[in-house]
Image 1 (cartoon, rainbow, N blue to C red):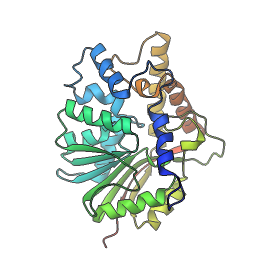
Image 2: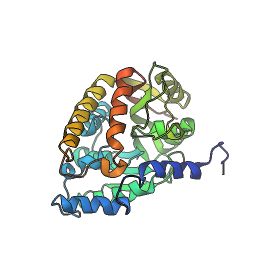
Image 3: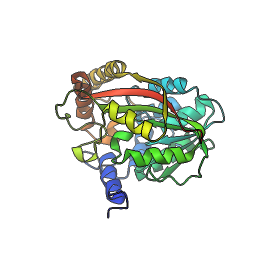
Image 4: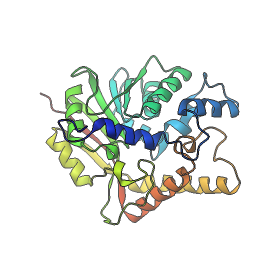
Length: 299
């Protein structure tokens, strides 16, 4: 039922779980078991994996690991910093920040299947000691006030119906002057309807895109000051075009783009169409990609 903020968070969680852990076009079984079996078929020990092995299923945002590294560089991440990875998915960015930057990371996602997979992958890659994952609403994270130096968010706000609540929670969680690092999909200037499905939504029910102006206004109202905000749409489009070509060529040859597990194991056979639609939405200006750093209030 609707909470005091006007929406049914439990019902919405079910909608997102249905999108990100759908059974359509798949062989059944839970996500964790499907992925473990896929690694076995690929000749890998599912309990001893490298970050390269798992990149196809834990970097589900545009630009993959390169985009995550660019965001980390923008934010000047340092070893020992405490980071919250909002909308962490299967935990790829969390593990990258732990392995390459020495951060201690808590990932939060509302999709229970993703959290189960994230915990497994961190154990399998030897990073369980520096990452942990919580299944929770991003607007109500079970962590102490002022317990984090950095909030990290890649391609997650467009799934959140009440961004002001989420931003207020970030202010609570951050130490005074803490940083927010965003790599987000926003609405473009083209008013045409979004071509669906896309990786974050099969219908408009779970797509909550905001224009850059709206997002920046929400950040300001929540007390965050922009340090640098860049439009990285061109790079994201080039990346998606390259991957769409690879996926099409692999499909024509009757094989996957890699022998290792990829996003189709998560999204199903519809993933190829999601990728093409995302490419076309970017090219048509229906969506754009932002990357930026904000500072929280110093209280």
